[in-house]
Length: 84
Image (cartoon, rainbow, N blue to C red; front, top):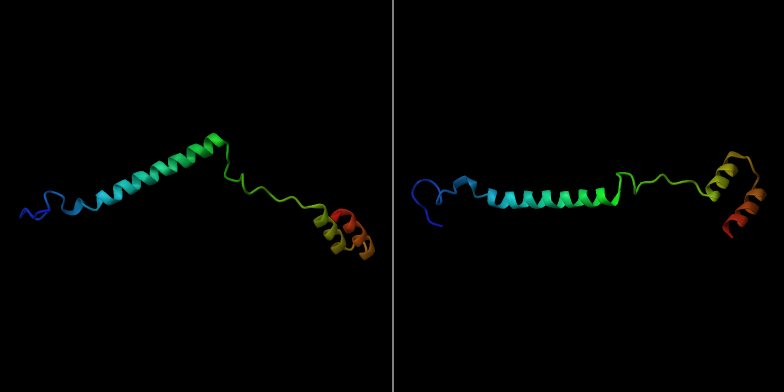
């Protein structure tokens, strides 16, 4: 580029950084729109991957043992049945 003596480079002056920023912003908008479109068409929701974990039979058995509802022998017997 050449200096034209009017304080800028052929009319670009302070606008030249926009040539970097605008394509990046447009790319980000296109990618975001694509992701949203795929999520919408796929029927995904915000919490689809974060389903609440349901306690397993072993978890429930351990809770009963911790509360004192069953004794150690009963716990071990039932645990063997569950783990098999």
